Image 1 (cartoon, each protein chain N blue to C red):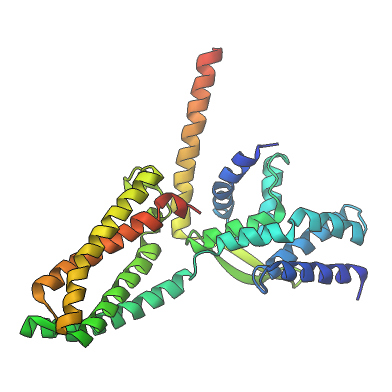
Image 2 (image 1 turned 90 degrees about the vertical axis):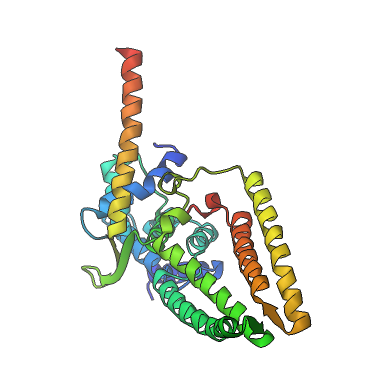
Length: 216
Length: 110
């Protein structure tokens, strides 16, 4: 192995030790490094000097890894989000059906079916949030001029979120208590619970997912 | 040399505009920016890639692995429909800033 190849192998090891993933983005960085080394050598530098300069220019492994982590914070890519959203939506709808049919026919919902109904509701909300991230990304990226929303100050936003969150929890509790004690939920309680869940979701979004932090 | 904040803010519009001319790869993008700016805009080489990956995740650009003339593996990027829209918007916003600055300068010196 030539000296240059040995240096490149050492560089790869340093990158891997810092947490840079292979093949992406390490292969891409190595391709860039080799291009720059070639250019420097064409300009008259020795292979080793070209490597030293080029590897410095590409950046420190830890700093690079930290930047890549930021860019990879979306935990799924677009295609995976669409597939997961479709599966979640279908499974959620299927879980909602038994409870909803019982509610329509008997105006009550058995405890077990209520559990499935709630999981279905959660899956529907989760799938909707995935679709929102994929198809309405601009709003999630904080482009306020597009969304016609002005950014509120963070403490106000968090405070409002907590109030909505607690109101939601208060509305959900009676229905949960009824389900626990009577093994079923009445229609009116279920209505309030649905409203309570909507408030819980809104409150959580306001409190924990502020628009400004989503800017890449 | 351009200051750090301005370099960071202009990276995305520059990448989009460069890719509007056809698909390209990271190293070529850095060299093109250096050439066009007369070496006044210098991206830290490795830092370009996290930006490219972020733009890919946001659906502005797409990537494919290909081969260089020497047979080495290389990742090529090209513009997507949303990227074209984003580029148009960047151009509009930067032109506005430029027009305001130019107007202010005229008011002061003419």
